[in-house]
Image (cartoon, rainbow, N blue to C red; front, side, top):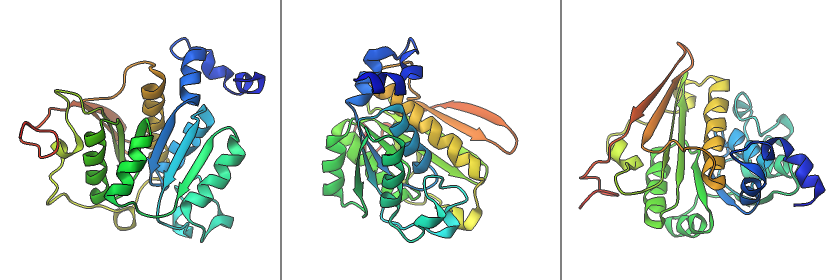
Length: 247
């Protein structure tokens, strides 16, 4: 790192849990962000600002006026642009030292395997169960940590899957058939909520990549912002899980 980098990241380097070595690990890291909506916006912004060396952004959608209430990485003059292009433009201005790769399409399983294989951490900022289940299978197969977030109405959830022995995976929590699909377009979402969950996803990724602190693995954090309370639930692996179970 040069003098400009030392100044840019000085407030993080001052943290004893991170230091120069942790900041260098962030600089050498590659994070894969799936979804550039309400969750992906703060995730991408804070990871780039924190000094992650490379970000790969994946989203097949374009910026719409209805997104701007909560998807803070996009602006009114970017309406109609692919979300990954809109996000890349802002991230390049925010931190030119962060290399950004944009993938403006939904990935096949083979493509996802290739991208996950190149990253040190994956952040699930998607808004549908099909993508979440696929990401879980791929990350489990490759042993790559997955930071999973979700937000709807006034409530959000957050957890980290490391796919270690005795730890649950996403499929342990939700059945692949019959999971209720909720969308912001149908139920609404409070704008700051996705900022809270996305920011916490970024924190967990930074801890994973730098080695600082303790990550939120084998626990599910549930946040209710309407009647303020935070709950942490212990997760137990399902021995019959088709992804990580004994079978």
